[in-house]
Structure formats: structure tokens, C-alpha cells
Image 1 (cartoon, one colour):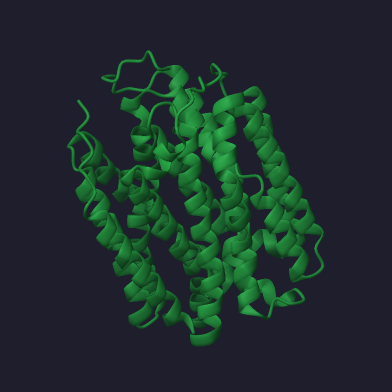
Image 2 (tube, rainbow, N blue to C red):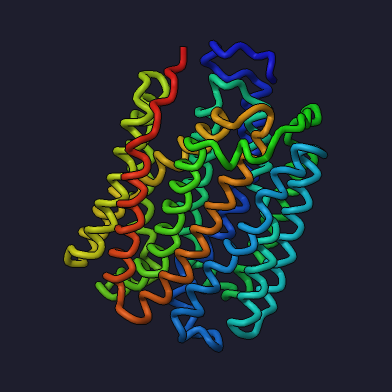
Length: 395
């Protein structure tokens, strides 16, 4: 797809097929993960060892630990041998971890399953594949479609998780996660278009690590996902405490996510077509900071928490759609896979830190400590991002 003109504003049929199929793979994988998140912290007490909130946080974050160790390798090896073999292998490993967690009888074995799930770290290869199959002019649009598919899977998971848990339990949820991963393997084999093997040009790997603008984005995705995992460790408990049963939590999450995605669209247009990328990114980071501070300080009512979550997720969704596109554009030479590997490594470290430290702060000092700790991290991110160079405006 490298011969596509950068001036094209509409996606071609092959680009659309590639983007939709790879977005579906992301969505299937994330659907399974999201179905665990909104029920796990509340229902973990039914599992031996689950009454310790630190272990609950560790179980949520363990997935990110092993991902962080392998994302760079997966991105690098996909540059050399091709994207499809790497993606299929990772999805199979992810399914194996899901089935181990499904058979677990206590929190220890759930953590083991989560660790193995994290070894299926395919996101860097999938995003690099999207970059291979789309023109630069359409890349942000493609990444936004991926972000949208993740948002849809999130909404479906929030609505369905309590009901599915009621029907099949936590073991059944993990089994479903594994089956969705196997379904994603089928999409890779029979739906995702083939692409030429990426040309592996020898270049100092340090180029990826020394690029200051990439480092800003890497720190950003670290902070973004640390706050996300910590938020889902605490918010389900808050909603339950203010009188909303977990089976009804979708009544908050669904409108919040739907409205935030609608409001995200004009922000993405302003960022990409009007050359306002820096202003939009800084505004989105500020929204996340405001959301975390309000969750820590404001009285908790159902409507209040819903309004604050809208502020948070508007910023989150803008950043989730925009930052991967910037990484692929800023990656030196042909090192898109390696750059996305580093990016997703820091994302996974954020997931791990958010789960482990979130559980620790919740245990020693309650929910406000979690939100204020996240606020401090996001404030550092805002300072770092304020000095970023404005990306060149698309012509």
C-alpha cells in the first residue's frame, strides 16, 4: 500500500477490508478482556484468595507484566518474518492462558492464566499491519476505526458481562475469552488480506528509543492505561456502594461510552484536518486529569459518577485513537513494528502498574488514594506533553 497517494482522503476497498478485519481481531480480543474487568473486582471474593484487594489488582495487572516483556520482540520479529504468523501465534498463546484461568480453583492459578494470556502480545504486530496496509493519509482514520471497535466491544462487554457471569460463572467467562481468541485466528487466516513481507532494513534499534517525540507518546500510553486499570479496580465498587447493583452498571457505562465516542469525532477531525493535533492531545490529557481529580474529590452519586466518567472517557478515547497513528508516522525508517513494540510495552507496563499499585493504594488508604495517585501521574504526563512539537499538518 506504500504506492497509495498521501493525498487520498477516502479509504480504498482493500484498505477498508484490512482495517475492518484487523479492527475485528482487536475487538474480539479486547471483548474478552473487558468482560473480566467490570465484574472481577466485585466477584473475586467468591474465589479463594480473592478477598485480598492487592491480589485482585495483581490478577488484573499480571496480564500487562508479561505483555511488557514481549511486545518489543513481537514487533521486531513481525518486521522480519511477517505479521500474520506472529499474530496467529500470539492469539493461540492468549487462548491457552484463558483456558488455564478458566480451570483455576483459586486466585493463584487465575494469576498464572493471566500471565500466560499476556504472553500473546500481538497488539504491536496488528497495529503495524494496519500501517502496512493503509496510506499515511488514512492512517489516523484507520486507527480511529480500531479505537471505535474497541469501544463497541467495551460497551458490549459492560452490558453482557454481568448476565454472562450469572449464567456461566467466572470459569465460563474465561472460556469464552479463549474461544473469542480462536475466532480471531480464523479472521487472520481467511479474512485479513495478505501483504508483502515487510522489508527489514537494518537500523540502530536505539533510533526508536532515542526519539524524544516517541518517548513522549510512550510515557503517555503508560499513564493512560495505568489510570484505566486502576479506575476499573475501584469504580465498580463505588457504583455498587451508591446503590447500583453490578447487573445494572451497564446503564452508566453504555451511555457514557456512546456519548464520548460521538463527541470524539469532531476532536479527531480538528486534530487531523485542521492541524490541531497538539491542542487536541493536550486537551484530552487535561480531561483525564479532571476526571481523576473529580472521582477523588466529588461526592459519589450515580449521576455524578456517570458525568465524571464521561469527561474521563472523552479524553481517553481521543488519545486511544490518535496516539498510535502518531507513533506509526514518527517511527524512523521501516521500524514501525519496533516502534509499536516499544509503545505497547509501555502500555502494558501501565496496565501492570495500574493494577498492582491501584490494589495496594486501595488496600492501605481507600479509593481516593487511587484517584489522587493517578492524578499525579497524569499531571506529569501533561507537563511532558506540553513541550511536544506540533505534528506537520496533513496536506
